[in-house]
Length: 238
Image (cartoon, rainbow, N blue to C red; front, side):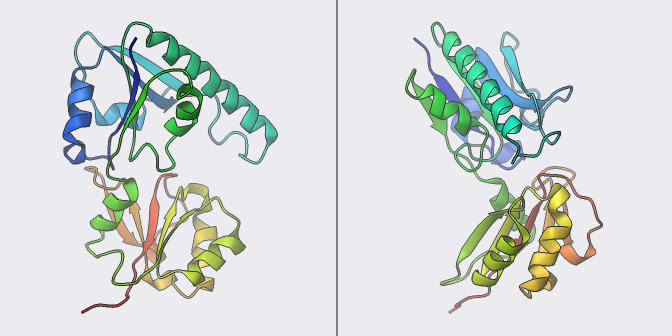
């Protein structure tokens, strides 16, 4: 019997990947990864040139991304069927081989693999290889420490309601907003209401060759979904 092994790829720069993840990718028999239909997928792009010649690839293509709002029951139904189906497929492969599943960032930090993990764990052996998170790569790209002393760091999904984002921004010292995309203007309004907009940064494609780092106030009206907004803490220092 084989096992399912989810490898965290880190924030994007393959040199920030762990030695263990690198070894598992380069020796894999089966590799699975999420992607939008018709796209290569960011996880697959990161490992370009690392896979063995004889590897079998399994592209897990999302049935929906932004076509249906996540609050719609149909969104949950369609994605649940998708995860059920791929859990069955990956489990079947473990009857003879290990299967390596690629995951951007850290698998247990808002990673899509978690939906497979809960379905697979009762059925077969599952290993998870941790990694540097995307947000860590992004705040390092700003060249400033994210927290000092007793600073409290809050991580928010930008998909939250605006009043909730505002409350969280007011109550925390350092902030990370993830999954910006269409939520950019909402995030700007929340930070302005909290008095922190002037201190915020936006990082796109952190640690990758086309990385950009800008003051949030200087950003236009559209940014990629996986952009990250950051507000640094300024707490106790010796």
